Image 1: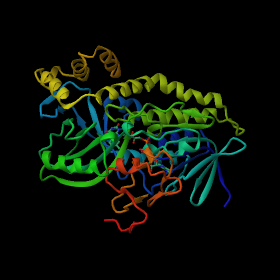
Image 2 (image 1 turned 30 degrees about the vertical axis):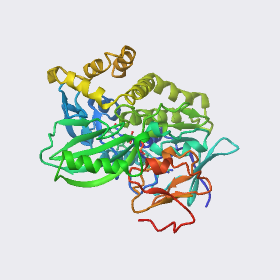
Image 3 (image 1 turned 180 degrees about the vertical axis):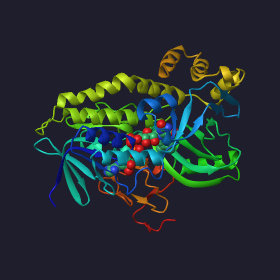
Image 4 (image 1 turned 135 degrees about the vertical axis):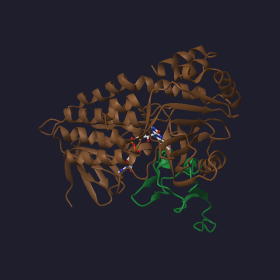
Length: 387
Length: 67
Ligand SMILES: Cc1cc2nc3c(=O)[nH]c(=O)nc-3n(C[C@H](O)[C@H](O)[C@H](O)COP(=O)(O)OP(=O)(O)OC[C@H]3O[C@@H](n4cnc5c(N)ncnc54)[C@H](O)[C@@H]3O)c2cc1C
């Protein structure tokens, strides 16, 4: 079969890839979008939490993608001290099955050719500078390739990047959907400590109507075969005994510095594949939406009508990312490096001190100010992380 | 020694691929594929798997009989 030819090929139809395909297609470029799976967005491998401001900024006012509104968060220390943070920016718990599905449909509606059940196994740059994307039964050609293959970031390795994560730069996660009538539907709860989730945290994110996403991540350096799942089962037993548990799945969160460069020749790296994730919270939805759109628009603008590519223009993608979120993401990495060196006693001491504060006066900057008062340099970094 | 997959335990999440230094792992639509020629048995994939679907097995033993 002859190779199909496009201006822009997008590999991976998560939020990063779909946003890229949608925005490139809207500028009338010939776009194809691949996903390995027959259906995108399932199983949901995500806690689905997002800050209100990030959501509005990058998704628009798509309230149909939200399931529940959160007004409070609680941190539980290793010895069980609960710190309530009453003054958080409002957050949402999303319906990612719907959001991811809608984004793919919108990309297709805007004119992108959608190829589901199509794993891209290899990408090669050919003599004329275009890219050949291979799948088991077809080959596709494109002038620009946007690589959005998520945590695995395998495709980039054919294009000169080394994206293999060291064990300390990945959180290995197990999670599920739980129905439990006693879950407070307005509060996200985070548990830290070496017993619950070594080098990571456990979460309860309520989705409304007694339902919640419950999961945990442990740092790769603390992992052994199957340990994330074992920790989750123990956590469920202890914190939500008797809850009905469904959709037990697993996944990985890259907690690394964002990949440099983000652009090589005509290839752009976006989302988890580019390690565009907040290293403290593990949040990447907002970065993926932002970077996907930016990469799609930039690629479309760099694509000349005669099929030529303005490679220098592509560099704008990295510059814009760096200006908007790059520094914040770098700080989250520095902070992660610090947090990895703390121990349970340290976390308990901070929790004990914070628990004396009235919850309504507690906000994230205050937690961090307290946490890092003995580490002035980190305080500076942390204060700006949320600034 | 080779890395073996227990397909019943695998959730196809791709975390193992994220840490593989030799690009020896590949997810197709239905299953994970291990390229034993590329694999250097570093075991990062075994250690990182949240569900414990991968293990290092001695080729000489009854290798595929995994429970
Ligand atoms: C357990 C867990 C909890 C999380 N919780 C949150 C949270 O609460 N809030 C938050 O903001 N973020 C969270 N994240 C992170 C967030 O889910 C990711 O940052 C986000 O999904 C990244 O989007 P993406 O498009 O880059 O990648 P993905 O959403 O991973 O999409 C990648 C897509 O590429 C496809 N693909 C991969 N390789 C190929 C190939 N070779 N060929 C074809 N298709 C391919 C995959 O099938 C997949 O559909 C969490 C992550 C995990 C694992």
